[in-house]
Length: 110
Ligand SMILES: [Zn+2]
Picture 1 (cartoon, rainbow, N blue to C red):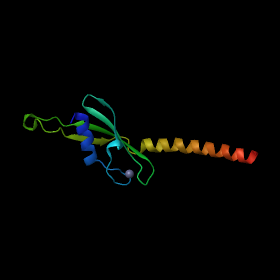
Picture 2 (cartoon, helix red, strand yellow):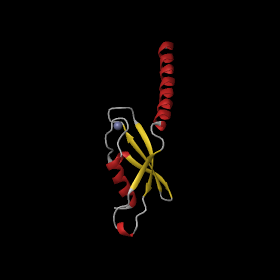
Picture 3 (cartoon, rainbow, N blue to C red):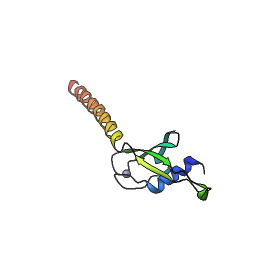
Picture 4 (tube, rainbow, N blue to C red):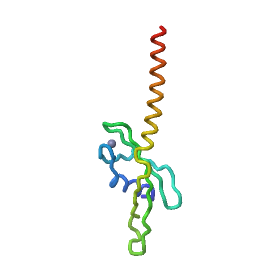
C-alpha cells in the first residue's frame, strides 16, 4: 500500500459527509494535489441530498524510529466545506434560470 492509498484508506475510516454523515466510498475521495508533506483531497457525496464537496488538507504525522514500518498517521483539515458547492450550485441555478427564461420565451413566442 503506497502513501496515497494509506491516506485514502484513513480518510474512508475517519471522514464522514457533513450532510448525511455517511462514510465515503473509494471513488468519492479524490487526490487533487500535494505540496511537500500536505495532500489536498476532495470528498463528494450526493446520497439523498444536494451534491456536497469538501476540500481537505491531509498532513502526515512524522513517525520516529519506534513506529517505523507502521502506516503513517494522517490528519485531515477541512478547508472549504460547502463553499465550492454553494458557488457551483449558484452557477448551476443561474444557468437553469437562464435556460428556463429562454424556454419560456420560446414557448410564449411559438
Ligand atoms: Zn452525504
